[in-house]
Length: 117
Image 1 (cartoon, rainbow, N blue to C red):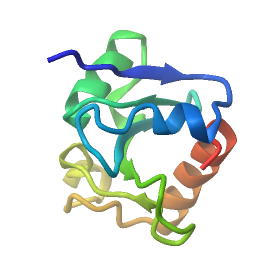
Image 2 (cartoon, one colour):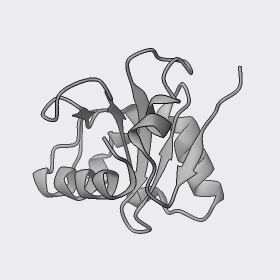
Image 3 (tube, one colour):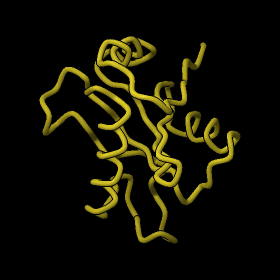
């Protein structure tokens, strides 16, 4: 199956975001954010695949965090900060969900800057 993962460095429209739907999920798009480079890898079946593409393009592991965007949800439930790649005891994150509210806000700001949600 084709991965259809893209690194987003410049703002995309909501229509472009929705073009990821159905590849493979009908209601959500997976994302991995590089909080240092302020870029997002969108799409694919597993967060680890998008993470790998960012690592290959020069990102550092400690700067990568995953989650999901639900384009058709309202603003409060649109972003989900949950991914297996977020389990990082060394960075005080022991669960799939990002625990640090400041980090969540940082990720939300990067996503809102690059994606018309």
